[in-house]
Image (cartoon, rainbow, N blue to C red; front, side, top):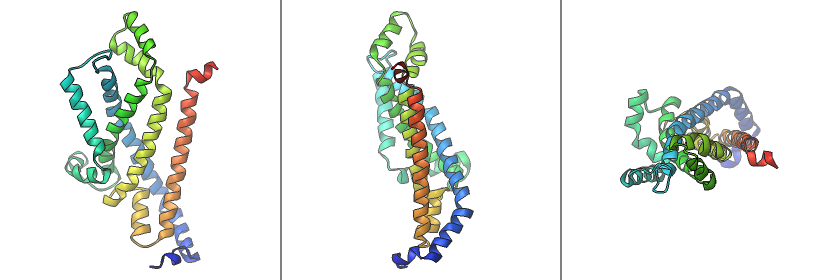
Length: 236
């Protein structure tokens, strides 16, 4: 098909009809898989990120070096595998958990596996920004490691955590678009199946525009929420 003919009035009308009929459910699938995968990734990545900081040799609760080395290698290994390859590699795990390797629900498994090491590193980065003097003051008052984590480190790093989790959400949303190539649902599948494979490029570009708009809304909300939770800005 000639690319120049992809944006004729007929094609644009076809894209608009697709937007009215197919896009609402595709947007729902994208948000559903993104938010659930982010939730599961935070459940796995948050404690892992805390361990990376608290368990280091000079941390508040040092852990054995072999264990810390294993955690770091595991995180680096999972982060280094391209998402499209990771989806194929863990198909047996996906089938074991949800009974199938295609569809929106099935895509949540590889999304979670790809995202939780990323979130662990983001949490690690946020916790390292906490003023060490505050932690030393809590230790001098006899606070336990768990008390320091839950009452000092995490509360002090809330703005940074919100910013980083917002970044993780937008990244996972990008992964959902790639998951459409191997049977995942959402806007990615719509862009590939209706737009690219059928040479309906107007639909393809429309799906990209919608993804960009959703990403901008999420990023703006995360930035606003992080500023609202930043006590340093309130004190000024």
